[in-house]
Length: 126
Image (cartoon, rainbow, N blue to C red; front, side, top):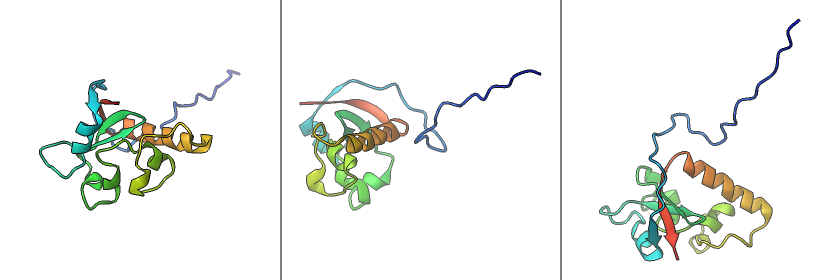
């Protein structure tokens, strides 16, 4: 009798139902000042959210536009707030290295989630 093997599919963790066609990631330097301009309040600029220094273009998602729940993340590196699952503006800052391993795992999950949905447009230049 032939032996059958169970082949596991690659995990599709955080994969959207309808995956968008994403552009190749860019490594363009984006200053903190320029990132701040991309907070969704000026329609002549895109809306960006940075995670661990990587900048994502979330312009197509109204949840990040002013007066919407995730607008607090727009225009900044929101790593700490995402890791701690908080919407407090004071927690939207780039410092995350001192967090407990569990929160670092949550942050990595957010990075994975964003990377499967939004174009990477650059890196925050300090």
